[in-house]
Length: 147
Image (cartoon, rainbow, N blue to C red; front, side):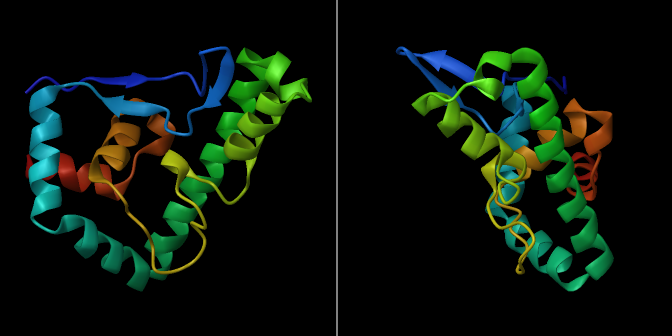
């Protein structure tokens, strides 16, 4: 199976406004998406959420990935969208609120420091696992081992 992901820009200009995109990586390959969806339908989101919630070390690892993502988005916003980073307009502020809020992590997951841990989507964690070496994670490893 071909494994392909894409990194999206964190800000999209559409219909005259800037729209924040807190999910940077997406799986492109239809067969991989289908295989991951099958795992989700088998209840692995719930199982992995429970496992991560119970294991303090694993929970802290995922919290640190979320925190790393917030820092990464700030770097990207400063570098690629300085007009938004320094801007004070309505849509600049919306983008900064969503992308730089310390409680909005990978894929827009909110309150990631509180239990129970919210896996939300296996596609998300697999895409990050494949898309950036800094975001290798046990969920992505698990998914790839199962397909």
